[in-house]
Length: 244
Image 1 (cartoon, rainbow, N blue to C red):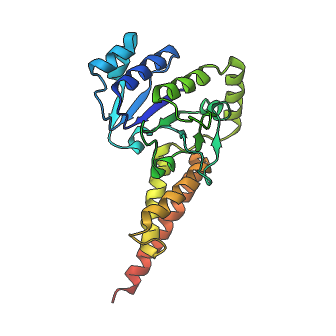
Image 2 (cartoon, one colour):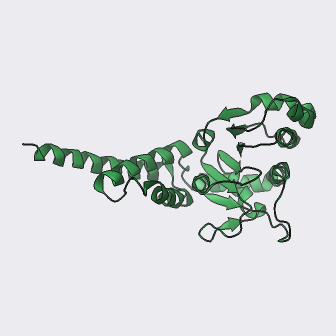
Image 3 (cartoon, rainbow, N blue to C red):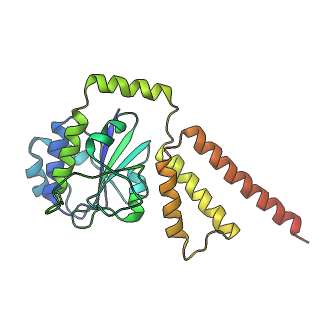
């Protein structure tokens, strides 16, 4: 299965170039960059990429994280924060085998501030590195390199087991399906008064996180979205009947 590397607002052109190189080292070519703060194909990036400079031109540049995740069934976000009590953190060896079971994305945050809470809520699982407490922060390209290495280390037997497991379970919903469902749900909840405009963003962030962690199948998302649409239709009918 393919793995997409996603970088959110990288600021260092040298980091971007080094990431292109390590991706090519381990046979990965699919990547997307959200609002880069540096020249992705500039001289510094090309110098660090060396023989992987052509991969710099293949990076998809997008305006937001949801656009970078289109087509992905499994999304893992990386974080250096250790105090996320409501988000279960896992080591690479625990979570990366799961990425091989379907179209997947591995998301890396900004060099200076990582991923925002709203961005973390778009992932289903959360990866952190067991670094020393005295200096826990990894360089961005180092973090990507470690993940690429772990991904490449999955043996043929592990791939066979993952394929067997994927045949036994229904396919997970693609990111855009789940995103569409939560958008419809937000509209409905605003309409019935459960959400209010000034607090909707923070509440929906929690709802999206719950939906992501549930790893819903395509059929399950279709069922939930159908319920939302039926409720919306019923509200419209009541509104029509109430008209004089």
